Image (tube, rainbow, N blue to C red):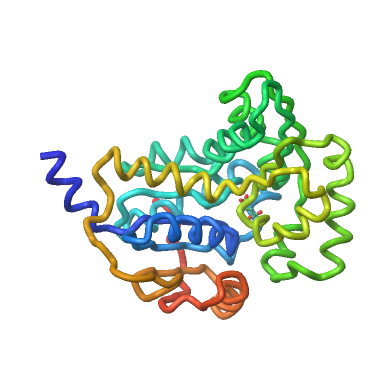
Length: 286
Ligand code: DGL
């Protein structure tokens, strides 16, 4: 019976949400890793940023987003936002009867793997709320209790990524200021603990230097989603022949505001605008 049910559910898309465009970095990683799957993405562009807000507010937004996607019909939910993963994962799991994957556990585990030494020095850059939650420190210590973790909040990276300012000199100066102490810490691995930050990957790498391995939790999350689909029998039975392009009409994108702006940032970042993009209002929970 359960097998039968999973066979039906396996046809459904994977749901993804973020506070804005940052989750596109996770969408891209999932799409690359799982070309037979299709996706429904919600960017809460009306309420971004989450990283400067309180736990109660982030939890409320995250639950509304999760419920919207559950109502759409998804087989698993990927919380492609570190802030929502840090603050709201237990509440989301308690509300929707689906497997939920956040980005913090996979990112923390990957950092330990790539650092590959006994007492690794792990840097974490993230939003203020994620840093305050201590979720990365906990995730890293779960994999390696000897690790030394140093965290820095980089709030201005979010609007810079939303703006698509990856190569501007202003971004380089801000990175220089935020990351001076991190450079001094000389991490073995540096976790990009906000899904917006991979958009600024190159400027961050130049600022901390070539010896620091940057960890993109999106890629680590995609690996864990692939294993979960396999172990639960929820992998799509479809076999798509040939190359599948990003943002094709199999994938459905929703935003809560400024669809045109989202489309331009997506184009700059992914090289293509979403074929199916709609602006919607996420209903309040009753
Ligand atoms: N993309 C979100 C994250 O990973 C942060 C952006 C925001 O502050 O909303 O934490």
